[in-house]
Image 1 (cartoon, rainbow, N blue to C red):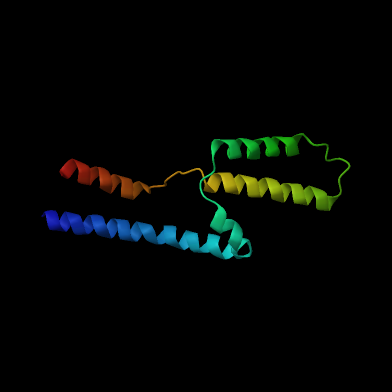
Image 2 (cartoon, one colour; image 1 turned 180 degrees about the vertical axis):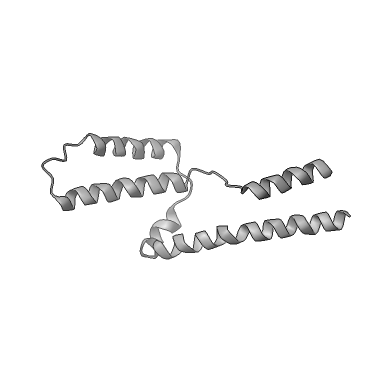
Length: 110
């Protein structure tokens, strides 16, 4: 009985890892032009996150009425990159509902 539970547990994690790996491939292909940037980045410290947030607030407070469309587009792109960078390094782990349910059931059974 324990062997079956173990194999079911392994299969669940194996199948839940496939979407995560597929998502990672899209990020790598999208950031091929920033290959050196990806190698040097690790976790963001609190100071770096604070600086990025201050930069976003600074951009939001700017008077954009006298800017042309290219400058506005560059600012939007910068804000978008900052948000993606902070989101990517936030350290959250996503677990699907069915995987969570099966983990809880396994904990209860064992």
